[in-house]
Image 1 (spheres, rainbow, N blue to C red):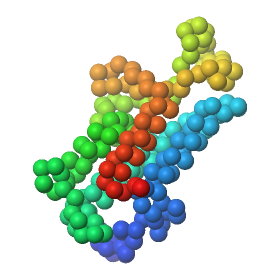
Image 2 (image 1 turned 90 degrees about the vertical axis):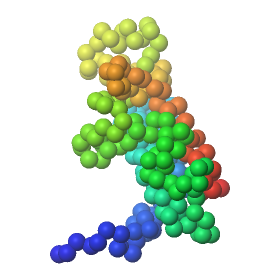
Image 3 (image 1 turned 90 degrees about the horizontal axis):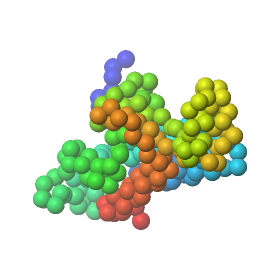
Image 4 (image 1 turned 45 degrees about the vertical axis):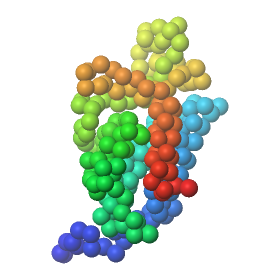
Length: 211
């Protein structure tokens, strides 16, 4: 069977036909907001939910990475062909947007977008592709007050798992990764994802793509 030429499919510009409920980048941002609510529930719910916490964190990273893809594609398309009103967005210099300059604008609003991309790609493809953080090793880890941390450090994996479930509400869940220098970096996961949501909201509003 002959392969269809790239860009020839009639749905190429209407992904919402295939993905119900996600017709445009604003819908994808709403999906992010919904997933962040799920993460909050898993984090602060009355019952420990480690699977919900980890799975939702992965889904959030995938959605955040999707926002970058959708944003760049739409900005480049409108820069070349015009938006619905025929206006072609331009950089401050007056030059058309490129993929490189579009990604720089994303980075200004969502500084950790490459971290989200690496987590998303690994989850989707089962293969680590470093896009900005060499030798990334990211995982969700609980942080406790020093007294509890000391107790946890003395336990084996099975004991540690039971301890975490017992002290679930006292945990400060963080997304930990090893940076380019090899040192471990830990970021509060809820704040990291919430800041990314705010950054995307601001960026989409600046483009007039979110009301």
